Image (cartoon, rainbow, N blue to C red; front, side, top):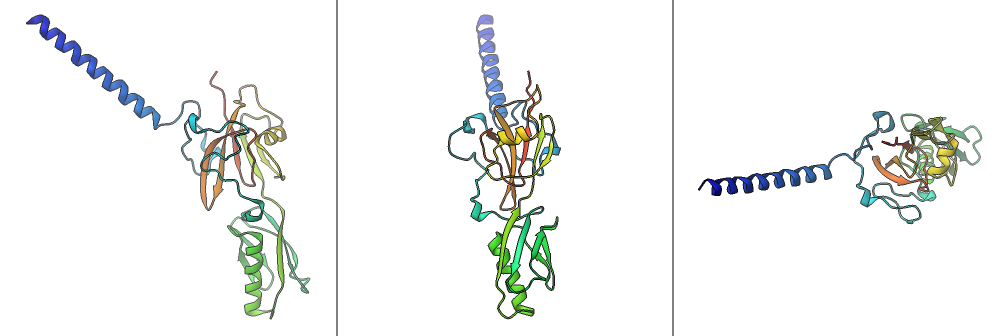
Length: 224
């Protein structure tokens, strides 16, 4: 009888250990990935990272989840963008305007006009509508982006900070602009934060991934 009780107890202990191990593994799967914690400085709104199986290798030809590639024609304005607005026949209204921190441009006669979240064409139509309602019978207005808002690169690079955006920029180019990696940098993937439709998304991307205006790139530190 004593031997039987010992055998049953051992089985119970083994079962309990298996349950605890399984619970621990399932708990880890939904949590943070060790070594990929980013300081608050790097993110406006922290968001969870995908698991390594969701990462796309260089040359995969598709964007990681949560970071859509926005076509140039659909580029939406935000603070820091500089836009040339031309009102035909109205030299005093035609000028280069900078989108303010509040997301507006200050146009003579009509005052503050919302620009954040609009394309250049949509901004032109909004300016024309405001002018038509009060001052000009049939205004002809065009708008184009002449300087895009900067991008930010932080973490394990030689000179972290804010830099001007240029067309065709990739993460690898951005690292070069920041004078390269530090000796402790992870060099295969970086953490990228981007606003899309007013929502901040944060994912891991390869170094050949295209950068867009306003992106925040964070180069992580190697554990070893």
